[in-house]
Length: 141
Image (cartoon, rainbow, N blue to C red; front, side, top):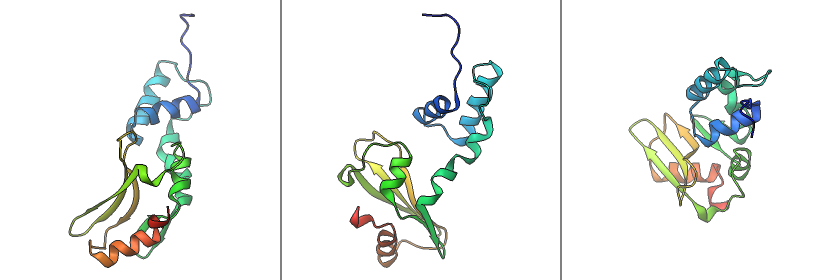
């Protein structure tokens, strides 16, 4: 084995930040530090992590005060998760006086929480829960 360090390309760096479950800010910091140590290949973009959610935006829609994922299978595939089995996930609803959030949680905690819906104007009432579940096509997935 060679003692010469191997430099990360953009895909390898992205895989590393995803495996470490790093936030945008932490991913950018890691990329910057690796670049300072000359451990990144030429052409890697440190600012890539500031806009990494752009690839996920096509799976979301906005209606009034609600942003929701309407294609859960596609979202999980784009995120690099294996085939989606609905029985492996549960829907978690978090609410306060002003904010309503929906997340998918993996039953075995193999994957992190996956935000699937968000509203800053709706309250947790049953007709809203049904509306969001319908928009997300949750019962059909």
